[in-house]
Length: 76
Image (cartoon, rainbow, N blue to C red; front, side, top):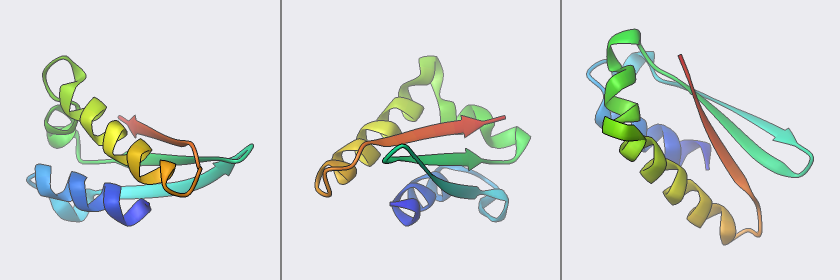
């Protein structure tokens, strides 16, 4: 799951080397914390949060195959 989110975010940003995805397990939920360069934060969030919501939707759909809840947090 981490690799999927990292792949999607790296495709969006200008500085793919600054992308970091940390994976945590909280009460059975998979939490992915995404960090990017300050200049790329707007690209990952998108206008009105559309891109961020799309990334979350893809991650949730992939997690549903494993009967797992996936939460994607984009840190600034």
